Image (tube, rainbow, N blue to C red; front, side, top):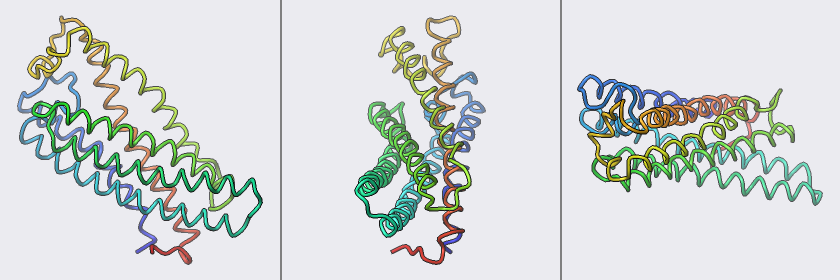
Amino acid sequence: MKQYLWILPLIPAILIPIDCILPYYLAIKSNQVAPIFPYVSDAASYSPAANIFSQIMDIICISVTIVGLIRYKQVNYLINEMINKQNDEINLKIIKSLQKSNFITLISSIIASFGGIMVGNFRENELFWLHIFGALSLFSGFAIFMFVQTFLCWHCYKQQLINYKTLPISMIIICIMLICFLPPFLYVTIYSVSKIGLDQFLNVQYRYFWPKNEIAYVEHIISTIFEWILINIASVYYFLLAFQMKKFGKTRLRTFYLI
């Protein structure tokens, strides 16, 4: 079964876009939000979209935690191989840094999963601030996981610990995209909220059907589009992580054990 562990990251990779699109379709069909263009959580505020969103999100979060644990064990195995090969002072410093980074990826995946469960189960039209806390945990956890995991993959290539023919360029590009999209998303979101006021923003009927002729409408649409992009960046990253884990399986399967 170990040779198929790389399939597990495909679960969040596939389910993340589904969890965006399916509730959106159901919400539009039921006229619960404006077609152009709601936040993902806004589209998943009412049944049946909310129920489906919650169930899929729970599956995503469970799989993200499992993938985080498996990847932690894989990288820990590679670090132990490095220890057996090299023992000079500089490399020991690198090893210590890699061990800390590997632990950070495990914790960040758990934080992201915890935040995702809160997002899925605390609807923003009912428990707004708990939902926002979950969203912040989800986004920050995913961001830290992606950056640090890319750093680890880069070192796996540099130290020739696994059969990497090239640097993890795709992962690096995804991290650059995250850096490019996250600040504008935060800026336009804060700007649109500041223009209409927090009380008006918390008015779900206003936010779900934001009038086109009202102030900050364009910024609101840009914010929602950026949110969709950022969420689905995580989906692409897990596709890439699946291929990284598949490479591990091909080269280390005989001696790697989940203990």
